[in-house]
Image (cartoon, rainbow, N blue to C red; front, side, top):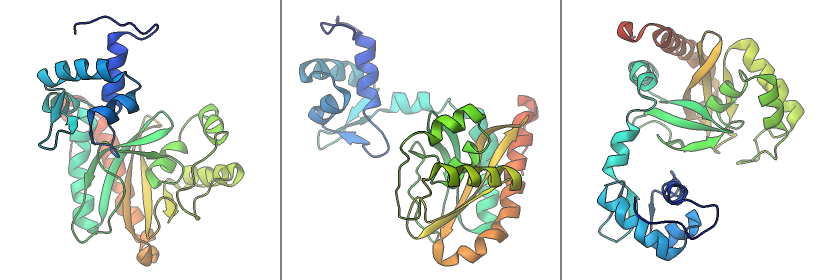
Length: 257
């Protein structure tokens, strides 16, 4: 990409990455001014780089002039994490078909969970997760299932942070949360009740491959039906186990439900 950097310490590449990184699930469309502000790139520089990104189809402009991620980036994004999603998706479909509830698949990325797949229906309870979206680990079922299987040093580092409290029911006390994680490891699944969103509860299980949690599979339903959550654990564990076995198999021998 043409052009040098007049800002010490910032290369053209770092500016381009900052521009692309300004988009997220909560900000899928941005004006040029918003993009410059969120990325920390000067407006004049952003204007020049955005023109090149549009030409390459990394960014696209809507009828209202707002910018969004372009088809070229979407196409590249489909390549990762491709094998996991391809192997897991049939199991998500089967779990949704069996329960009729929203199901999603997530992986850990830093201190957050990144949702990589989702199967849902019109009659299921609305949920805040979205494919490509990120949420904190501790208040979400999938995040807690993943966090419980992280090394001790990572858990200690995570609990030492100031923990987000999305609802009054979110567990943020380090000692209590550590006990919850121990229970998740012991029983093999996590349950949360209105910790991420009021009105919904969840169950989640880790997708284990050689003892390591590669991902987590979660199911969400209305908190009015919280008593039904335990009956969903068995099909959830079966699906998570199926994904783990499929992922552990050689790529040419992938399996489905």
